[in-house]
Image 1 (cartoon, rainbow, N blue to C red):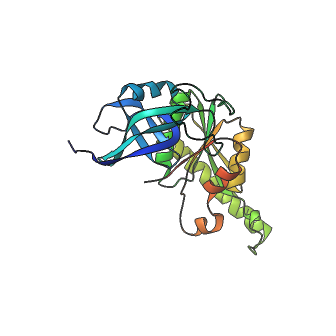
Image 2 (cartoon, one colour):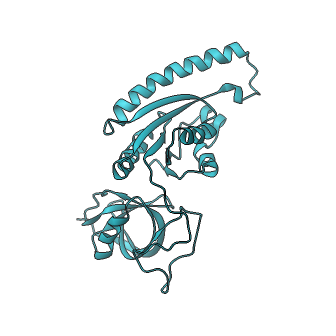
Length: 256
């Protein structure tokens, strides 16, 4: 077995997800998905096992992080459940801070999430995003709505083409996306029998947020990188804008 390399003390704010990373060590049954976009295998210690009771919640964890086999191994020394998402922020829990396991208060309690919007672009990152959607849906007992936004070309007024040409282009794009969505749900979301696909026309960042609210979703899940090349040049960083504008919690997944 590979020995852990080095190690450092860390103070991590993140969300606890049920599951294991198969790191080669005894794990507590939850993974900490940090706001630094790193995953931490919570090791099976008395405090690590206590974290299982806080799955699907934000926590601040202090402990020792070691690297082994490409995984971050986290030995928990102290943790404080958080009622806020990152950025809402009270300070770190110090020696005189809240007792581990007690809600510190001072924030808005996390609402019950019964439906998750999972935004996809049919790129190679979709499988990874779908895996996180399945993990969270299982932990929350939530439905999953898989959304793809076809760009509405009228948004780009500098493109000098006729309205008829734009409509024809959008109709072809919608038809192709509907087929891609059927294939995507069947292949990538097969572990979620209740997952439903939806294709809409619009400006992706705004439409993702609007659809999530209209559909009664409690969370948005999406990748941080989509297609490259011309589409990325035209449409910019969708995830960044969604994170900045969404009133709902947004969990972003960075492809390896």
